[in-house]
Each structure stands twice: as C-alpha cells, then as structure tokens.
Image (tube, rainbow, N blue to C red; front, top):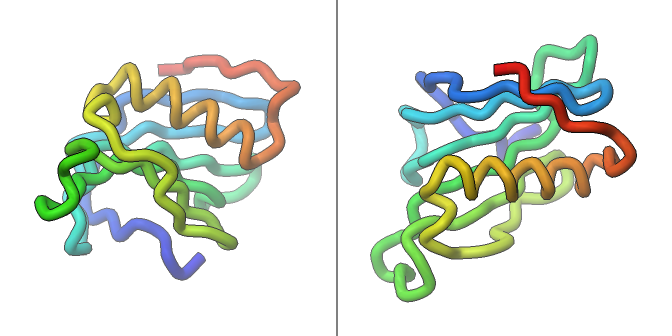
Length: 118
C-alpha cells in the first residue's frame, strides 16, 4: 500500500478483535508527513503484520477549517478518501466509534462482533 500513513512514533490507546482482524487505535502520533494525525485506527488481518486499512483523524488545513478542525480519512490499497470533516473526530470516543463502523463496513465484517481488548 503506497499511500499508508507515515508513522514515526505513536502510543496505542485501544485494541479490538473483529472477526479475523485486529484493530489498533493509535494516538499521540508523530508522522513524517505534512499532515498532522490526531488518531489512527489500523486494521490487520490474522496472520499478517501490515494493516490493510487505516481510518485516520487528521488536522484540517487552516484554510479549510470552516467545516471542522479534523478530517476523517479512509486509506486502503484502493482508496485514500476524506469521508467527513467535523470537530468530533478530535474526540477519542467519537472517533473510535465511527472508525470501527467504517472499517467493519469497508472490510465486509458486518456479521462479526467487535470486542475491545485494551
């Protein structure tokens, strides 16, 4: 995946089991990119080491902040799309809830239970 977030350092905030995938929610992210990430939820299939999907909360550029301070972005092999811009994506609870919903939908895991491990 060429467009994956460039993460130098991050602290794990939560971990989930969703069927055969694990998802790690990262915060306090230092990135090698121009954009600033607030949170990233990375989905990794069982038996693999690299995520196949990222849902990111990133700071909206100051010229575009009329709609909100944070953008919600989905990054996978096939897409790198902004799906929403809003203040709430800077809140851990709001981000986690929506990022899990998006990840489950994109990966086709609707019939699986989300279990918080950490």
